[in-house]
Length: 291
Image (tube, rainbow, N blue to C red; front, side, top):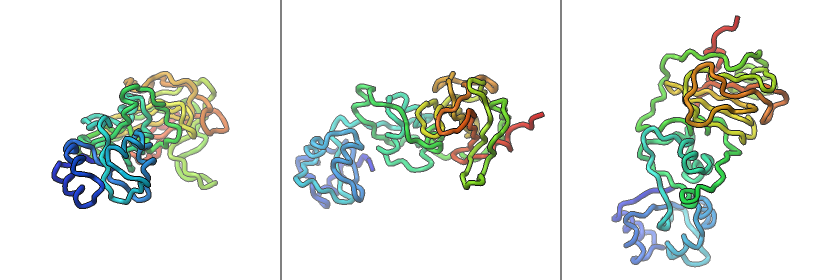
């Protein structure tokens, strides 16, 4: 856990816990502080923070064998970058801006569900990525909740109360082959699976901003996530060609992709979800009846 502490608290903690010399805490008034958690190792913390172990050892005057204890205070070496979340920021937009993975930001900052940022929150980002923008930004193991949480704009307060439902439209022409809810084999489907032929058009279900596009999500393959008004989000999976990019504004009925069979699917289809906040809602309750 990363925090910035006032100088007097650094002094008290250093005096009480030990391991930080007088010559060191005099430099720490504006430092970022890491609280060691149970089971963490020096090498593990260094990897998580994008640092070299030797830099942590030198900054904190650690002695071999470098065993850490729960609650121990480590000062982050100068040059480790932090970012103060601004109103309207999203986790996905920050990952895109700094060309690092949202998955890495979640891990680095110990983010927990609903994975939503708060205005004024301090995030630690790998310094190397900020300088070189060279880190792989693909998210191979994200789940839908992490993507949806990362698309929520930062604010000081929760704004998750549902307003009036928007007028969602069908995202594809095919018939529903798997409905929302628990299936016969015990699997829970958080949306609708809609039959499609490869290359057939996929439409935006409502006006909104494209919050995420990706082709490396193992289960859903090609994915688009669109952020709508009032905290609603739509998710489109198993896509072939994606025709929009993150940040685009799309209109209801606009073609955003072509259908495919990417990810874990036995046949070409569209996996479609509608969520309010992180909660999946049965799309059939929000879509118009087909004639």
